[in-house]
Image 1 (cartoon, helix red, strand yellow):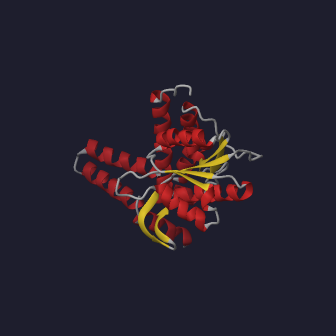
Image 2: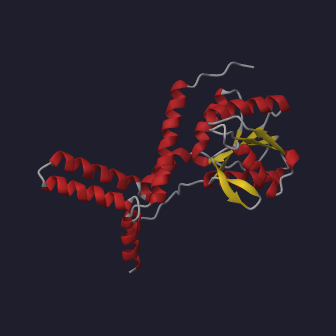
Length: 257
């Protein structure tokens, strides 16, 4: 009965409902002797189904997270916390705005490291639109709520993507004399971040947060059911692969200081 309920709910909610519609449209087109249109609809449905499965999303994430490890000994002079998104106008316990789910895992990791080391934290993240609150300002409020002293928080509020994160944080480190920064970002985002920071002549020690892949995924009937959470992970992984390819092809090496 439980499996039956899972199957029904999986195909009543997106993306399962979209898959059903695409398959239905494909069968309808074929019945109307419009075979190319029908096969196309079914192929899109199959693609969407595949992207919504746990084995596919886990495989894509595993490729990004392979070789990314947590250092056995944490040593540095500053913590760099890369932005991962924020909700600007949401209500919160101590103000307005809150970090995204992705950013929250990075934030918690940075707090845990700061409490162990006492190091200052550079919070990197601006606003996409001029009317938005910079992400770093929202994150700063959460860091203070979690016990990080205001004097230990340094804001970088101009960056809008990882490339600008690296460029502006490198300037902050140069001004403050930081030479051994620890870089906190999501595990799947670490390879691209390291590439960009390297091109900006800033050597960092990776301190990954929020690993999403598992080494051995158990196959059960449930792994064949589409889920929006798996689709979101697949989309994040594909975005990261595209970003890696883009930066490897286009990112110039920064001039030596």
